Image 1 (spheres, rainbow, N blue to C red):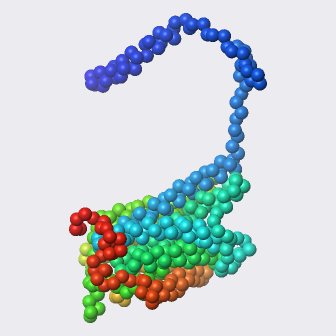
Image 2 (tube, one colour; image 1 turned 135 degrees about the vertical axis):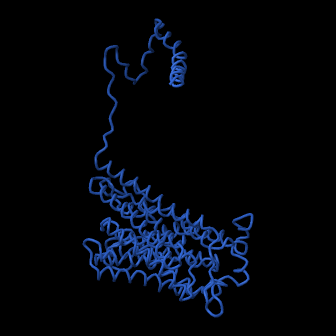
Image 3 (tube, helix red, strand yellow; image 1 turned 120 degrees about the vertical axis):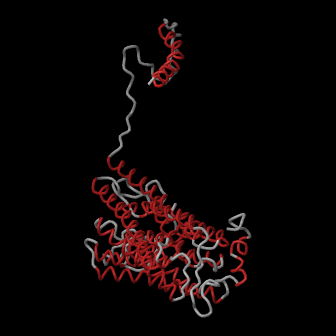
Length: 468
């Protein structure tokens, strides 16, 4: 108690003593002020003593302008969160792979965003949003770039500035591209990957996006995919499956007799941190897809989406952990991490139209599916080092179908059609690309280069200064 009193006294003295000269000065009679200078020609004379100065002009912001500002700023922040998912993917992929390929993986993820941004600006955005004249169609093109004139948009609730809309959409395009990086890790040439990334972000993904979000034929059928279980994640997952099939497994992954040889990742700590980053980034991915945030209805919808996202991720991680514990007699961290991602992917299509309890069910089923799909791929000798196809392909399709099972105002048949058509588009367009690259010797590195590691062979540098 004495200490507190002493401290309070010291604080008072520190404040009061320096203030005394100022207070004394204010008590003294003020010196006479010099006569005010006459106003210059054209200037207004200052108000005489006792007269009120003219009021400053007040800028009035309308409700429409305020709603427009809030909607667009929140969408911008959501885009930033989605872009921050890129390092999350990079860390998951790097942690699940050998240390000798870390630089290569990080570089691919960086280029997904760089190439994706440029190609989506030049052609992708115009393909994805071709305009009303292509409504109900399959392809269209609105032109290069994004509207940037001062009259590009009229302020109104729900109206989006094309500039921030592009930023949000290009983050989705980069997400679809980077999913494939993990499926082909450790054996694909860097140059071939750049070709793939350009094709997917500039053409394959924008067309699938147009079918649903750009007024295409699936939107005309009332197919529902709120934030992209199918349009984004299944596209990346099935493109990754095509790449893994054409490339074949990593050297040493299977014996001559076909027995599976585990190749554990070099750093589960990095992979775990990456999953946490992705989990946080998903709150830009899903709630951000509401697109309008002002007003009671929009606010409540956004909060429902956010909680459904959280619950599905938690259920997916828990279900995958429990299943791996039962099957392998010990809980498997890598399965639990993929379970969290599976739950997030599964809820992405329907987070706006299911209940909290239904989101738990969807996430838990996704957690079971991802474990079973990882085991099935291994039995089929399809080498997917990070589980990209089980997480994004299988659980992306599950999310689309689950929307028809649980979602309000949906049709199950329509959901099945859309959940099959878009993955098929991705798989059967990327398969010829990978086969073509393989035919001309551009796809896979040589065996000795693969054994040495892509970091030194492809980039001449290592991620670590010591062996890990």
